[in-house]
Image (cartoon, rainbow, N blue to C red; front, top):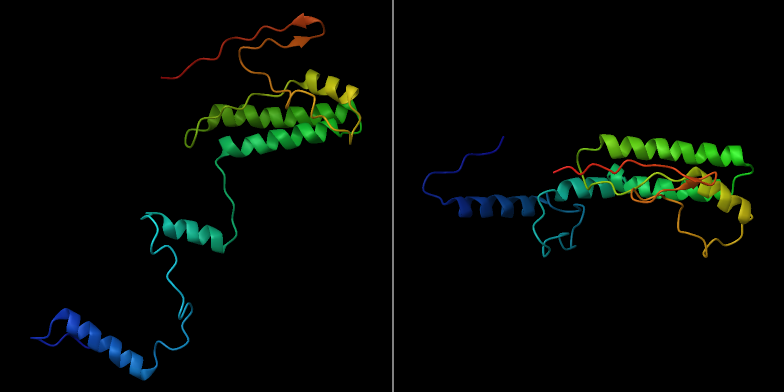
Length: 167
């Protein structure tokens, strides 16, 4: 049991005495990090340092859904361009479009989503023009349709309602 601070002795003196007794008894020998500088001691104060350290220790990567969906979209477009047939390519794009719509309509925290659905027809057209494995650097970046663009489908322009802006 821990002994109580004797009356008349300052807290600093009492704490120093406890540390010195522990040092003599060898209680501090062989501790993790012995002789190493304390991480983050010179850095800016971070209230959530322990959360970040836990995530690093557990090797967990986390991105908010509105940022993670960008990588998912790019991977789906690349997979669709390399797909064996149009049906598979369409399925891949529709799956990622469903996820994009969900993230755009349900995410309430984190950064706002700026990802638009991928136009299936433009990806299928690119897929037909470019063989899988060839470079597509000269093509548009990802076939995404911005809200003010009107995609051409089957020779006709498809109407899109303008997006509402939230205050």
